Image 1 (tube, one colour):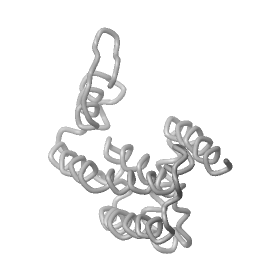
Image 2 (image 1 turned 90 degrees about the horizontal axis):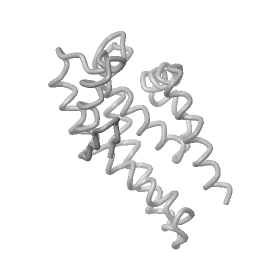
Image 3 (image 1 turned 45 degrees about the vertical axis):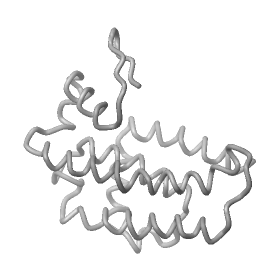
Length: 168
């Protein structure tokens, strides 16, 4: 749910993306009209494939510590990690196609922001070895996205939350 002045908006990421990019002048450039169809496709893939994969990771890695239930078997944790690695990261690596960002060559869109948050969260949980070697374009993109000040601030907060759970 988003509360914005007099408006209370309920929905999913698609609803929020369209509302915020339509109503906030500062965010207009993240939703270029000429790429709206491609953005819709990526949002649908995010909701149907990427998000469930990340939720599974969070469930098996953070769930036991956060909610106090039994640890998941190691093979189930590894299966969730491998699924994320093979089904998500390998696909995203191929999306760059000689571009700096997922949809446009030189500027991020809402897709970059959404994917960045999801992927960086999963990477903090999985700690994939040789990530840069396996995913060079994705690695460069993550660095570029991390250089965006507002995203970096959120990343620092998220790292602290994850580290606190892992230390307990």
